Length: 119
Ligand SMILES: [Zn+2]
Image 1 (cartoon, rainbow, N blue to C red):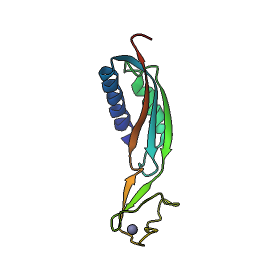
Image 2 (cartoon, rainbow, N blue to C red):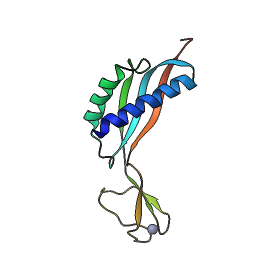
Image 3 (tube, rainbow, N blue to C red):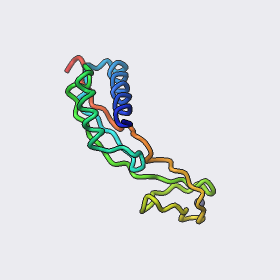
């Protein structure tokens, strides 16, 4: 399942951050999941619950998931906008349909709360 591989790389990323910041473990993780990522929030959450048991730094972490809206960029005029409907794809400025999804297609790590050695 896609969610499992994404969660596994998320945990790797968290471990890297902990090392870089000389922290001990992670308290809270906030991720944004794009509306067009094709990922299921509850599956993502249950994958995280499974994976975090095996990670020293993420074991006690809380995962918060935020919806990330789709953002489109017009390839013709460069206009960036958030469409009302996901399927709707015409540039409001120049009416071109040559659009690219520039946000909302994947998972982004938005913030991490870590516990350091002196806390
Ligand atoms: Zn345009």
